[in-house]
Length: 264
Image (cartoon, rainbow, N blue to C red; front, side, top):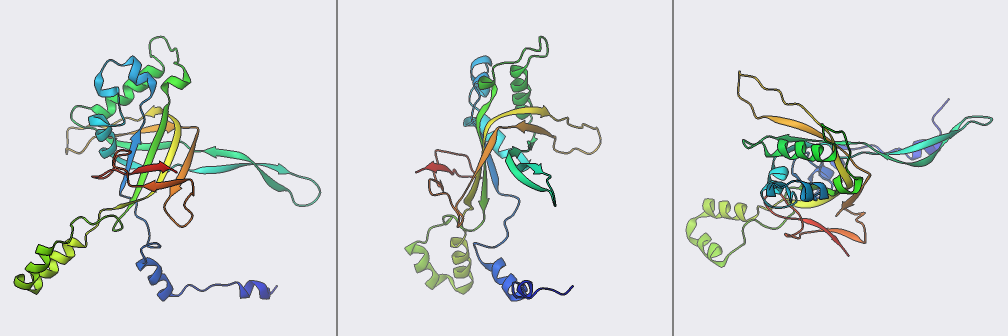
């Protein structure tokens, strides 16, 4: 059987020139797996049951910073359509019945005071005590929001501002130092491009850490989380009209600066 003409006409050969132009373009250059940050909202069970001030607010302050900066790896949540199937005469076909979401895992580095490990141990213990096995109310132990912020390099505000003094110095510094100054002033902070907002989150598993008395390495552990659903916000070409990503220093942590999500 030959290839139908309509299939031939719809073909698209990817040339090397087109590929290079996509890579060099700021909007279509490949995204990297680094440059992310996270922020938890504080569940009621931590605020009300734990007497330690360190865990009364895990969104901001030292604990929020530790969770953010010591989150070394995270898997982005996945979404799947659940389906049913009709098997009448002929070829069976499937139809959509709803959505299902996978759990996420976050790898945390352990500081010397073991803040990251202690927080999730206390959280799980507050949900269900190991002595009586009673479980707290769902609304009390869930984290209302867990935001995952994804940044891209080179599109944010300039790190250094151009100054009149710098321009005047170019006349006396020479070409080499002048070029160095201009390159420095062209440096930009990463720009927030996407946010994954998970709703009603709680830890379901605290992973183990392996210790040994051989070569010293950073200690880390994994935490698995369940959640009800998530929303994806982006500043890309299909950005949501009602929710946009914006630079708001008060709303979320960042990699050295704050960004967040703003509702129109």
